[in-house]
Length: 592
Image (tube, rainbow, N blue to C red):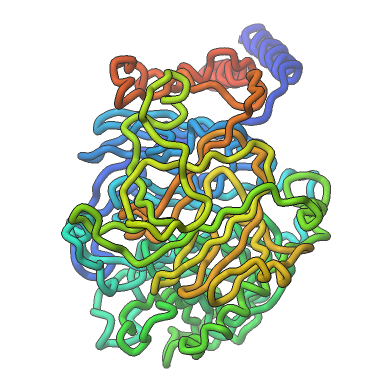
C-alpha cells in the first residue's frame, strides 16, 4: 500500500509539473438545467423558470481571464438561448446567446457555452433572451473578481451580497407574450421581487399575510459589498436601505469615483456595487427597499419590494413607514443629476495593472456618428411594433455570421441608416455595417414616453453626455472627455438623449438593443457587424465545434452535436485534460 501511495504521489507531481509547462488560464465549469417550477412570490402560485431548481439561478463566480464553460440543458417546452449580459467575449460572438448570432437550443437538447472573461472585472447577470422568458425568471448573477495581483480601490469588504431586484407579474411569460402579441400594453406590474421573493409585510393592506421575503444577515461594524442588479422587464427602480448610506464603487465592470447616496435609481438591465457599513443602532431590523420610479407613486404603491437587513444583535423587527423615496418625479432634470455624477475612477486599476481611466478617449477622432431614434410603438402590417430609426428588427432565420461563412444570400441587409429617415416605419433585417477599429459616436435619442435602457453586447462604451431635448452637434460642447464612466447599459430619459463613444476593437456580430423587454420583443434592436477585412484567423475565433445550425443551414446539424459539447472542450486543451487526470488520480488515492 505504501508503494502504491508513493507511486500515485509521484504521478500527481509529474502531472502538476506538466500542467505548469502547458499553463493556461483556469477553467470554471457549470451545469445549468433550466426547467419550470411552481412558486408563489406574491402569494399567487405561478410557473417560473428555475436554474438547477433554484429561482433565481446560481451565481457564476470567476476571476479575470478565467475560461468559463456552462452546459445549458433546455428542459422547457420551447426554444432557449442564454445571454451573458456585459461579458465582453473577445473575438467570440458565437457564444453571445441572442438570435442574430446563435441558433436556439431546442427542447430536450443542451449546448455548452465556452468563453473567456478576458481583461474584465465586476458585476453582471445572465438571463434567457428568447420569447419573453426573462419575465418568468431564468436569471442569475455573474461576479468576476480581480486577480490577486490587482488591488481593488477600497478595503476588502467583510462579505459579498448579491441582490436581484425587478418588477414582476403574476402571469407567466407566455401569457404576457400573448398580451403584447394582441397589441396591448402590459400595464402596471403586480409587485417587485428581491432575490425571487415578495415583500416583507410592512403594510397589511398592500401585502398579504404569508409572503416569503428575503433577509440579509449582517454583523454590526462590518462593511459589505452589495451587488445590485435590476433584472426586471420594464420598470426603473429606486434602491435604498433604511438608515444606511450607499457608497457607489462599481458599475458593470468599471470602478467609479466613490460617492455616498441615500438612494439610487437602477434602470432595467443595470448593475451596481455599493459598499454598505453596518454602523446603525441594532434596536430593530432595517428595511431594504426597491420601489417603482418615474411613475405615479400613489397609484404604483404596490410595486414595491421590501427585504430585511438583520443585524446579528438586533433587538426586534423592522417597524414603521418605509424610507422615503426621491420626491423629484416631476422634476426629471434634478433626477438626471444622479447618472451624470457617475464618473470613472481614473486612479484605480481594473482587470489590468494600469488605471482604467488611462485610455484617453477624449482625444481620439470620431470616425462615424449614428443617431438612433426610438419612438412609441406603431402598427406595421397590422401588428404593434417598436422601432429604431423607423426599422423594427426581424430576427434572421440563419444567424448573421453563420450566413456570412456559408454564403447564405438574403439572410440580412447591411443598410441600417445612421440617422432617422422619417419614412414609413417598416419591419426589416437591417444591420449596421460598422468599421473594425473605428471609434464611433452613438446618440441614443428617446422620443418615446418611457424611460429606456440601451445595452450593447460585446462592448463597454463611454457615457459622455446626457440631456433632455433633441441632440444637436452643439451638444458635443458639453461632453465629458476625461472621466466618463464606461459601461454596457445606459439609461435614456424620455424626451432626452444619451451620447456614448465606442472603440470597435472586438470583431463579430453584436446585439444593440433596448433592454426594456416589451420594446425589445417588439423589434427595438439591431446588430453591429464588425469584421476585420484582413482577417487572418487571429482577430476572430472560428465557430465552435458544437455550433448549432438552423434556417438555411439546418441540413448541417448533426443530431449528436449538442450532447458532445463537454467532450469537445477537451480536444486540444492540455491543461483541462491534465486537470481531469489529477481529479481521477486523487479520487483513486482517496478511495484506496
